[in-house]
Length: 232
Length: 217
Image 1 (tube, rainbow over the protein chains, first blue to last red):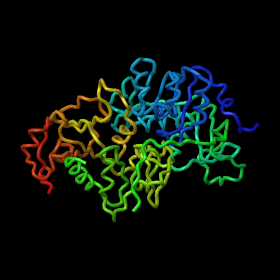
Image 2 (image 1 turned 120 degrees about the vertical axis):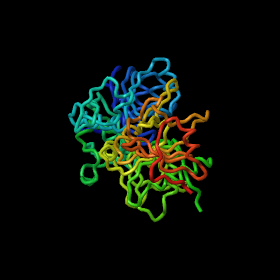
Image 3 (image 1 turned 180 degrees about the vertical axis):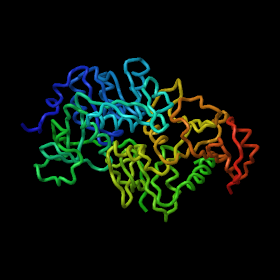
Image 4 (image 1 turned 135 degrees about the vertical axis):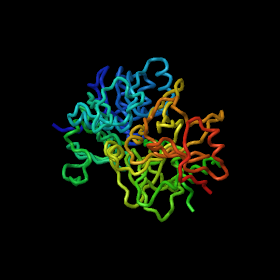
């Protein structure tokens, strides 16, 4: 059966209320624009989202927030979003702040069948509250749990029809890890080629982690902070 | 840029040695990049997945797929590499980054750092700061010595929630430079025209003056 689908609405149609989704992207860089938009149109509610950030007010995961589809966010940084602040203060939105490296490793571990791991990150801080600790060679570490999610949304640059993925520059970020953490990973790519057309040495995410693959077009790729120097 | 910040940035760049892999935090630490001597081979790490950050792009050459951790458009240096976020933090948490220069809200005399949340204000998140302070080989914090009310940001104990406990190696402010050692917090330098008495007066934390103390000119 081919992994390639042509309809984003169909690709997200079995995501039910209360589902958990791991989402790739850092800020607005490398976000799965098309799957997010399809889920927004579908209106699925009470979602738990694992993502480093939560978009901006009118783009990315911010669209799902504005539509009140998210119940809980697990993120490292959510400072770009006013709707987020309102919903959090109203008690409509639950937030679990997780250090960025811990979040990345939790997704990787979950996808690798590792239920938990110890890290020094967060020891002695508010995020250590309620977490088990263990000493190794006299130093204290926190137990952090691996993340698996019902679904994952990832955005690749190139893919082949078997779901092998190649990412471009810093748009890779959390995408390979979200792909590992998702039980059903929905990947979107700017170009899809036949098997054999990608060099096996250049593949970042093997197709085994990808269950559904779609071609995305007309990506907006919004820039949050345009910083330039003037040409001399 | 305010004079205070210029002085801090100029002092902070002296922490960087040729050949280092360095992570610069968002805000004032990012400005340190502009001061790195041109003949140094230094690779700057961006925790969203790049080792070898280059300058901002020429207008019209911005690439939305190429940003730094502050979400700014950037370029790459020759010899740079891209990787995913788990790999990025393996570098950080595994002790492969030689130096992290980070901003601070408060530092305690026992080398605790608070730089991610103010109770009562909306929490934005810690991003990669907690990973960096525990993982980098050396952590240097740069910040203004006192807050806008004139109160010392260097405390006996931090009043704000911590980013890390006992993690700061060196603190650089607009008045002085301190090291955190087995013997406690030590004043190692004062900025030009600043006396030890003035530093003592404006510092809530207790510290000793290091034998190698000097005034920065």
